[in-house]
Length: 108
Image (cartoon, rainbow, N blue to C red; front, side, top):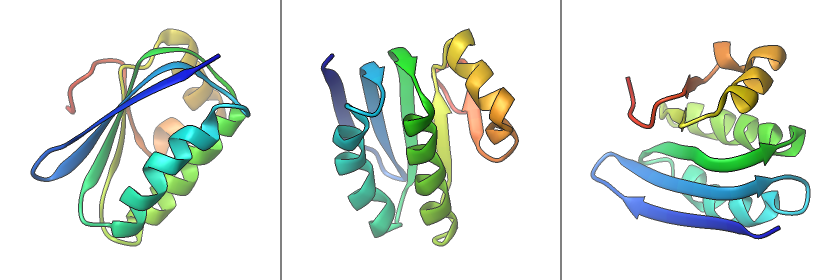
């Protein structure tokens, strides 16, 4: 499955729109986008998963690494547009308590 990734730079944050399936095969594509952003550490990152139909633990791992890197720069990671199924992954793993996860596509 292909992964579609669109990025937009806003004043205080990067917006990353993802579509497709986030799994062990496609996560490296998203990692190639997120790693430079998080290393720069100058903006928050908003990842929109509205068009992601499936995500496994590899995707969760990428978001944990991104969160840790951003925390070193006092920046935030927002995971937006999550489906019920993906939201449950964040709940079950306890990650919903550590990062901003929102079913809507706007930061609350």
